[in-house]
Length: 314
Image (cartoon, rainbow, N blue to C red; front, side, top):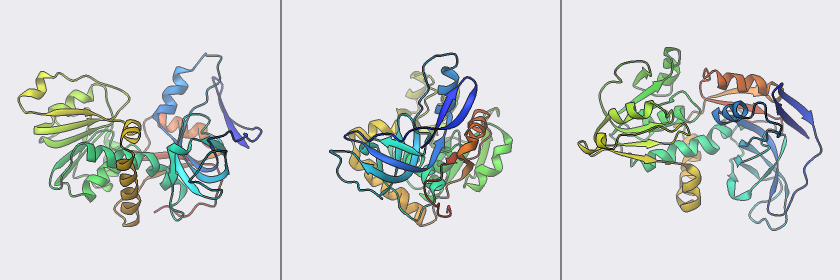
């Protein structure tokens, strides 16, 4: 199989023996793997360490072998989800609890956009109790998940969708995804208050997002970058902030997650979702990582591994 060595010297695609399939696991021949900020942060944090880096990520592919004790999957099933280590290879071991079936007609790059990013986008909207006619602001709106939140806000009946992005160059992309207004982080004002803020940026922007909430407004914070909130700032307007992770929701309410996953594929089939990807070949993984590190990407960054003849992306 082909896999990746990550080191201080760079990113190198190498040949390695095919993995053995232990009990309780699936062997998946990948078609595509997502590249995100989490990988960039992991590589930066691991510089100078002797231990090998074995990052995880979102994958889409076909089941090549089924380990003992696994039920519900067969060789040939097309699946997508997340693996927590050794994701950057054309053969990966996956926990069957963390993958689900992917429609055969969906192109691999689009599927990688949706198997986790699309699920997070819709689940966060639902966690924020979004209702048609409400206004929504999305930070990190040009990211792999953020651009889908903009599209979902529009598709589900938002009266106004505001996209907050890092630079003016990203504004046309955000508008093409359905944003009514686009603001940059540097602007002193982000406009009129909104009913719901979906924060994927974290840090100092959390406070700005709270300040954008109308009375009874809600913020859903899902960024790993953290941030702080002055609770007293919530009291007068009866505003609220909810922390969100898809992993916790999946463990505690798998019924909800399964329903949201079905809705994502349905919205894609109806044309209400248009996943936007920047696609690289597997041998150009280093360039893909560099693009994410520069924060210049528009949509999800994906590397294709060649495990299947990909259908056209929607």
